[in-house]
Image (cartoon, rainbow, N blue to C red; front, side, top):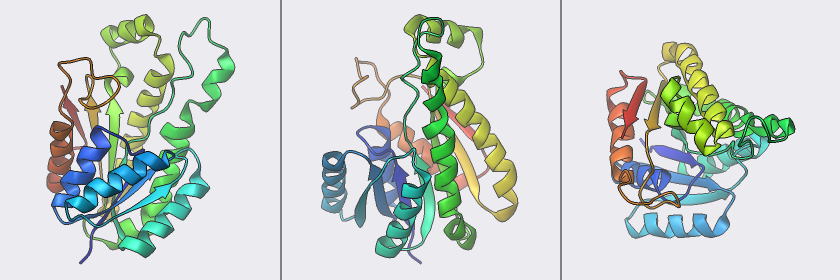
Length: 229
């Protein structure tokens, strides 16, 4: 039976490594991002490795566009087996005391509206397969601790922190609703910068290490959250 992974928020680093890791395990891969050049490069790389792949330009904050993506992926590659949510947002809100509060309105467009829209659009396929999964990339900025809060305030990343925290809660709620249907939901929290991204300043986490953790969670299906440092 064919297996298809849809990667939303594709770019260098985590999502590229996850696409290659799952592709090496027999998955076809649909890549979703707004940047067409990035998508073309990703598709070429996957096809060089013998992995069936297709690109779908779309905004991760637009549920209607994501429904069209799922339909296209299903048509070109086969029923959706797994969804990898790697979309990033929240950077507009920096300092809580000086940034226009209106910037907070868009924080959850990707973290909540987009993710929820993607899950709902993929749900018919995820329900049919015996190994359906929703795999979410998250960041340590959303963790509840005074140390993390201090770091977030010092680096003016309040929007990202709020988006990450909300996303973690949504993951937990999805676990409760989808577990009974045999759909696995798992989250990998990255506590550090990732190699191959614009944030790589040295001593960064290899993207392959994160991809391996996603594959481990997907196979075992008995752990909701993992943290990679």
